Amino acid sequence: MIKAIISIIYIIVCLALTILATIQSKEDAGLSSTITGSSTGNFFEQNKGRTKEGKQKRWTIILGIAFAILAIILLIVYPM
Image (cartoon, rainbow, N blue to C red; front, side, top):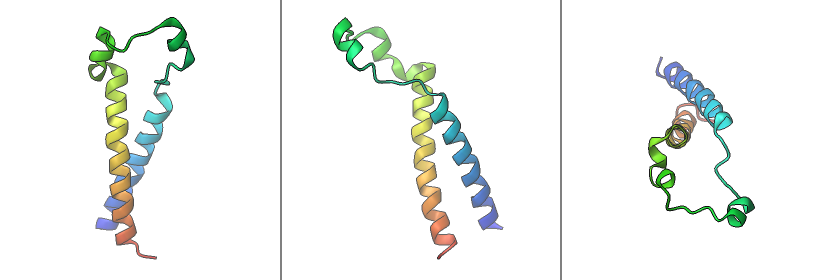
C-alpha cells in the first residue's frame, strides 16, 4: 500500500516538475545585458521572489528536491 502511494506521489511530482521546467522563461540575459548595461540593483531584481517567475523558480527547486528524495525512497523500497 505504501509503495503504491509513494509511486503515485513520485509520478505527480515528476509531471509537475516537467511542466514547471517547461513553462519557465529563460533567466539568463546573456550578452544583451552587457551591451545594454542592465543593472541588477533595480526594483524588479530586488523583489524577484515575489513575482510569478520567482514563485515558479521556487516551486521548481522544491519539486526538484522532492523528486530526489522520493527517488532515494523508491530505491530503498524497491531494491534491485
